[in-house]
Length: 159
Image 1 (cartoon, helix red, strand yellow):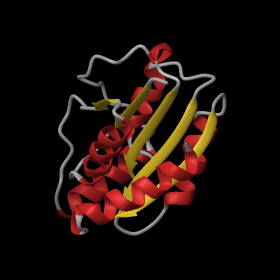
Image 2 (image 1 turned 45 degrees about the vertical axis):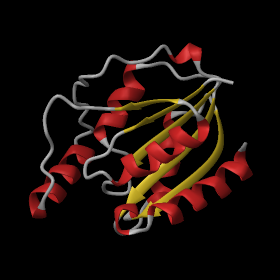
Image 3 (image 1 turned 120 degrees about the vertical axis):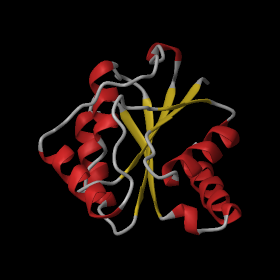
Image 4 (image 1 turned 180 degrees about the vertical axis):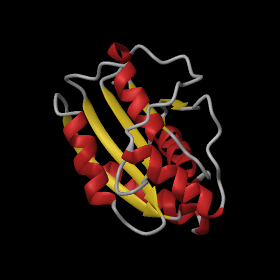
């Protein structure tokens, strides 16, 4: 079984989870990089993120995107912005055709919105089988071993 972990991470929280997943799954891993840097601090970050979601922005990605046909299972990770997935994830979904795959979704947040985010992702990926979802609140503030244990438990449930 070929597995891919694809994610976007603004402040490193989603990257923590993605890196652990890729290690546990011995999978390929791609961190999406938008062509324009998104502000990381204060009010500007929240304004920019909300505006990006509201206007359905899809930034250009600097990455070479993988051939999705090579993978049976894809893990997609995103921070949650305004109860949705991020614009770089929207760009990825627009650029690749994901159909007939097993998908697992993970998200990181500072204050909720995971269920709405997952519902939007499920809708955008309706031609696939969602095998599981998991969310984390500020994983950078947690011990890495705690995150790893949660992920191992989740992986045991969904694989």
